[in-house]
Length: 357
Image (tube, rainbow, N blue to C red; front, side, top):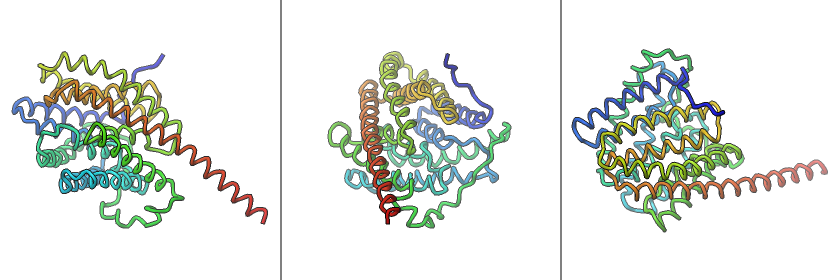
């Protein structure tokens, strides 16, 4: 019988920080009724991400690198405004850079939480002013650094902190690391960037002008060059979305007039999703992947209810984009597998010819 995930000792500081940030930001939201603090909480959640080790310095450079990456994306998005072609180019470029740098010494900051945080600004609470979202992200970064230090101070942590290089060292990454197709990270970057761009172009042409959720759903399943792991992630997101759909719809019906309750439920479901994510990192399992997908979907819907976004339409769009995303991810995965076999055959044939000579 499958056991529910539990809070492991190495993750307690992170989860404690998540709890402190939630209590602080949601209390401020309740007192002021200002959505600024909801956005601050979401940004804090992403900044904490998977950080489980205390930095040797007060300012965690990994979180700083994460912050710079997100802000760079936000500012470029702000300059582009409503130019869909340029935004498509931004999605392609950012995805390519994401895969290259996470495999060249920046894996702590260029993580999936950073990618999600960057892309979802365009699709969450679109009526809220963009510059206020940017300001909330700055406040959240300061909060995250302070609260994470506080959480580590009162929690025993054995994990060793891996400090990344300063951000300007990204310009020292060699041209070979960026462009050599023989390198695994370059192949992953090409696969990810084209998947993101094609998916964005298809969805924005038919049903959603900003289908970043579909891009995130697809790319979350294509993080590594691992067919089994990617297939499990695709199944988990697909089944989890279908199971979570009616559950989330029921919550919308029950919570539409109860913003305070839905706000409290954000914390429960987000922290539960975080516990599942940590457990998946240690030991990936399909049922846990499904549970994580259900929890993430319900968390997003609770955020939507708290922000007074139209419920069922918002839910349907999120689920539809998730399903489209995993279908495209599945097609990409199958094509990629075929290409791998073809390249392997060509390489074997080439070696045989060289041996004959």
